[in-house]
Length: 599
Image 1 (cartoon, rainbow, N blue to C red):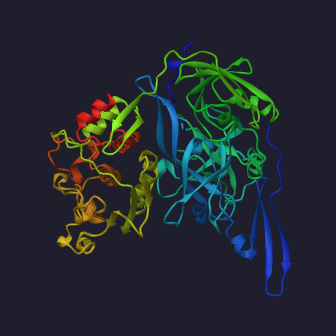
Image 2: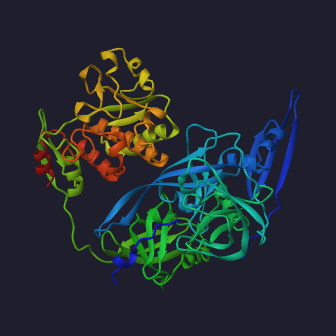
Image 3: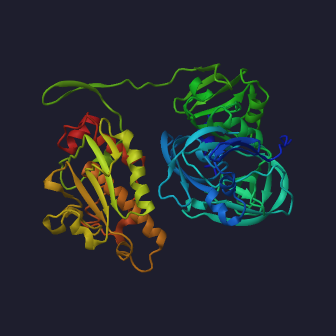
């Protein structure tokens, strides 16, 4: 489901043709075996599958509910979007989202909703039975059809076949997905309650949709809706507070999927956008190398006119999508609006093929921020560095993250961070570390960070406490610490008293769960676990403990008591880490020096 952005606060002024499903086989006989090439057509999407055994290929085509879960995938996304904050300012916000999808071929093609992956910086696909996720690339997407095609490097995937028939009222269905980001697949049954209805909403404009009674929750978007024969009759994409649930019929998206895979689709400007009645079309983000990106859109713009027609009072993406459908790929479409971050009006002309792309501001910004150059004296050379800008909130977070009792800045730096994960981590443990490494990388300046079990200098061991003294044979096991150790007594033990290498041992299973009261929910324990890992990583990179308040929590950090008082690690923390690694303040020894440099 899309977020609702209060845009009003900052504005100044026919079914597609059906194709027969078919399986055609070309047989080539050699002296040793029979080789086959099987072409499977799904919703006009023809995917060439080369196999040496037609029976093996056919066995991967899902034909019953039991194997359907192997064809469904959970999709997790990290994205960056421009949004209005409560203080009236705009900020690039990092999001972690989760949706659903499903395989349409044995070699890794996946269907999901456009709104699941729009604006994504990274996309990971979690496949049933696989321990680690797969990195996905976007093959193509359509904001109007709310469809995206992904591809992962995966062979022998169980895959669904599309049904090239419209849903029939009263038909029994099963919606498959991962509601609320659950790790386990969920089946929800229902019936078709309305065969055809308007498919337009704030973030898409599907030719037509169908209504059904299988509950669609956030996280279920993009999952398959199948019939009693386990064939896909539609894709879950929307629901509302009145418990109405909607799907995109497979017949509607036949051509879109086929054209995307063949690289022939040209009915998208590549935007993650939402239409606000009384405001206009707000752009959260723009896909790299898309027509809008080539024109100069970056997110944070609101479009109020398309080809001279005022769309402020439109309630859906319908007018925008109709404008795309009625123009040739090389025809310019004209846009007017306001770049809300710069408080400047603009006009733009963009064609769907991206060959014609112009963007011009109509007014000058009211204020400009000159770049500040400051000379910083180092021990050996004098270097001119550009003064970075950080909000007072980030500066205070950076300063407060130290122990609060002294003015001294505790510094810890690496030139190359190699994170190792050992023992028996759960999937969530591994994912949390892997994702943190990925997300923090852009904030570390010249410092590199990667996962490397062969040559790690930041090592996590997931072991029973009875095995902690076997990690390193010195100090009787003091190289590991559990989550209940006072952080004033050092939450990490450094090998050879050096910051060049250190380790962290983590309790696993019931040993960790027993740190909590017996009535603690499993979800709370899970959230605490992930927080502790992320917090440990922040500590590892900076030597500071995030948001530690020694007055409220005097030198004590117990897992069962204090995990919920902290917020999740967010962009603000990454910016504080970036400030920590900034060359501009790297030689400061006190928080006062840092403050005076940046104020």
